[in-house]
Image (cartoon, rainbow, N blue to C red):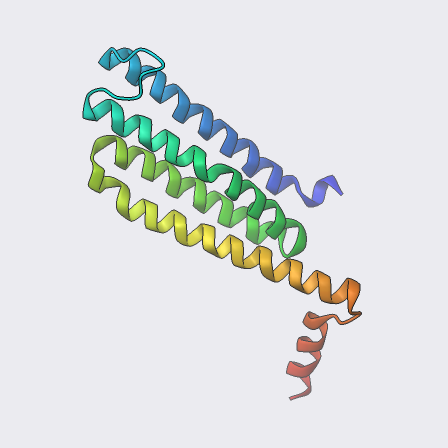
Amino acid sequence: MLDEVVGLGAVTVLGVLQQAYFSLQVIYARRKFSVSPPATTGPPEFERVFRAQANCSEYFPIFIVVLWTAGVFLSEGLSSVCGLLYLYGRFRYFRGYSRSPQGRLAPLYFSAQVLWVLIGFSSLGVFLSFCRVYLNVDLLQELHSALFLV
């Protein structure tokens, strides 16, 4: 069982390390711009780093849930690749937003698209599993048979 989800585990750990990196960047920005906790306002440069970290943290639980759901119910490999793409997009988003408000847009759209793909994969995987387990219908096998009969 564990060898079937090692890719998902690796992407999860990488995602947690990325979140830690983003949090450290906020600590460094607090020191650089003299913004003491619990303050969340300061120079625009600090606020961009703070918001970039907060935005990434807000989406992280959604990402982890759909990463694992897609990986367990549809394809571990495909889910892991999408997870890596999402983390890459989030890294570019963080770096871009930290530099300028406009720098966040393209990576934001990219990571949102990847997240929607993972949501779609999750939904499809759960639906196919539901049909196989509770309705005794293997839709993938039916589709495969139909395609090769033609």
